[in-house]
Length: 414
Image (cartoon, rainbow, N blue to C red; front, side, top):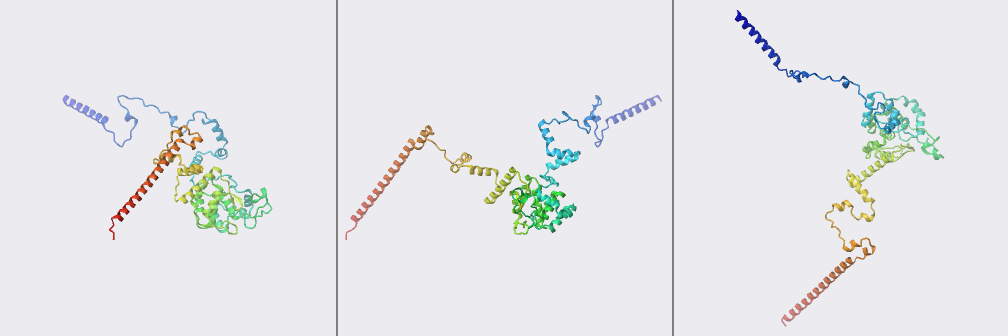
């Protein structure tokens, strides 16, 4: 009995040890996620460091000056006084709206078009704008339309020209100075439906997609014309070339004049909008001088590409052409410095010792002893060669005569 009890106790202890070892050595399933305890040795248990909760909070700390954001004083003052900050950003309280503003400013291809210049008048002339607002067509009909598509239908049915005034209603006779032309005080006529619709498009705020569909429309050329005029009046001058350049060779025709008689292609229309301010008695917004110079340079580049048959004229070639034109006629005969540098076939000019000593003297520049000596030697050598040739010719003639006499003497007498 004692032996049986001892055997049972041994069996129980062995099973307990086996269970314990199996429990401690059992491998962890591969699918189980790892925890911090998996990286801690059981023999050397260390305390897990406590992570400060404020570092993971959603509120960011502000370091330094809490009012100036550590900006330079001059920069901060200009930011606060800027038109963009005072009149636009100061009213935005939402971070999402600010993010939208960042997206718009960094991406010009957004569907929302910017408005350049006066945000209320669309940069229209004061007299034209006043007549538009007071016109019966605008006050009693267009003011109720809020859809761009309905306005396009109005353009199709109402617009027959792109002048600001209807034919025969504009009286400018006797108007001079500030009262002359479109700047007149009391010389307004009946404003055209085209400019009424143009201003209503401005109030509706066309999107980029709508404006692109207008300038590519095949329904009516006047829809395209109003689209180009909207671009010219409202878009930033720096973007005008990007808008108009694809249409410089457009051959579709339009007659912008009231009453007809001035047919031109859309290529000519956009060229006028890029190079001139006057538009049938009214004025387009003035393009800043640096941007206008860039536009003129791009026109000149297009002209050179058409003349030389090369669509891509490199900037280096343009600079070389400009440098060549800036040189005097005398200097143009000489190659430029880079041409002389890279021309290995051109022999390097050498100067005689006399010229090296008297290079500054006008007298010796014209009368060089060594040059005169060299010229004399060349003349003497040439003269000697000519004499030698003459003597050789005389010798040949003498020999020919002698041979002729010998033939006569040896000939048999009859």
